Length: 119
Image 1 (cartoon, rainbow, N blue to C red):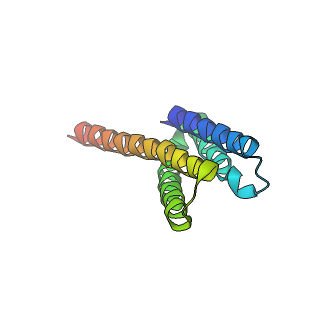
Image 2: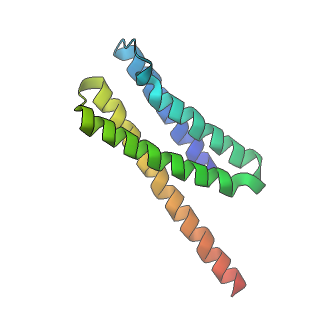
């Protein structure tokens, strides 16, 4: 799961930077996907480097993914975003939604493995 977090974070970094450059945005808000991506990638790197902290880092990934989904959808719907802003928000929803789904699958598999081991 740590690798998926690193990859998802990298995708969001690229999206944030690309949208900022292509849209010629002077607003720091166009970098929000990149900031989220940096945190997700950082959590993935932490989980990979410190296996004893991996479960905590992956819970952080799941929580941040949920917040990113809610924030991006809320902004897209509430503000009626268009153009590159809408693209960035929807891309953030998709990438973090996939990460959240992977997180839930991973948590479920870990729980089933623990239950099977205890017997």
